[in-house]
Amino acid sequence: MTILETKDLRKYYGKGDTMVRALDGVDLSVEAGTFTSIVGTSGSGKSTLLHMLGGLDRPTSGEVIVDGERIFRLKEEALTIFRRRKIGFVFQNYNLVPVLNVYENIVLPIELDGNRPDGRYVKQIVQTLGLEDKVQDLPNHLSGGQQQRVAIARALAAKPAILLCDEPTGNLDSKTSLDVMGLLKVTSRQFSQTTVMITPNEEIAQMADEIIRIEDGKVIG
Ligand code: ADP
Ligand code: MG
Image (cartoon, rainbow, N blue to C red):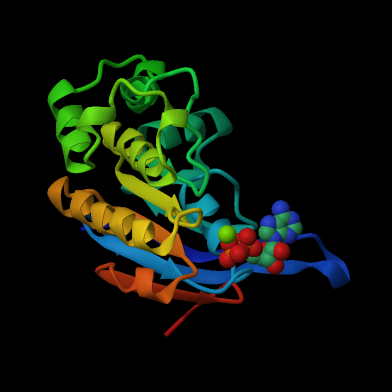
């Protein structure tokens, strides 16, 4: 089953001589439950693409279809709700709330959405990510790799249809990067979590089930 699809997706910034075609007709599709990496050099359009896939910004033209919904046909408020319910994000910066402990950070989005966390599911995620001993700790007592694992746990706990990660290991050393990547792969399998990860790193990209290559705003190969 296809869970994510784009059709002739374009995003142009600026106009005239200085116009940048950040995305220049992207067609891609992602099967539910798979782990896909999107790899490309700096400036190739990766972050722009991720923002469009997650409905964080509107394209110049084209469609993004998530779980059967053409998301940019939704009005702003409906799109915000859709994004909150369906999309999980992990960014290079962990964006944890410093005054909340690890557990509180993980369940915060669920509670903000007016729901009660699924305690068993959260516990499984915490165990899989090796955070059992850290749940009471504040984020600034953790290493970068641990903080990114908390950010991943937080995104997974809300059971998003799609987990979108933008260079999640960009601030980590190479060993920690491979550890975090391995965990993303494990969680994708264990929780049948559709995961799309952007990376400039070919070695990291190779750990995914599917690889999409992007260059100058176009999918190549
Ligand atoms: P990547 O994440 O692969 O490094 P980006 O998607 O951030 O690439 O950027 C793709 C291109 O679009 C680059 O040329 C970048 O300078 C340009 N770009 C990105 N965001 C903006 C913006 N808000 N305004 C103008 N140009 C932008
Ligand atoms: Mg980027």
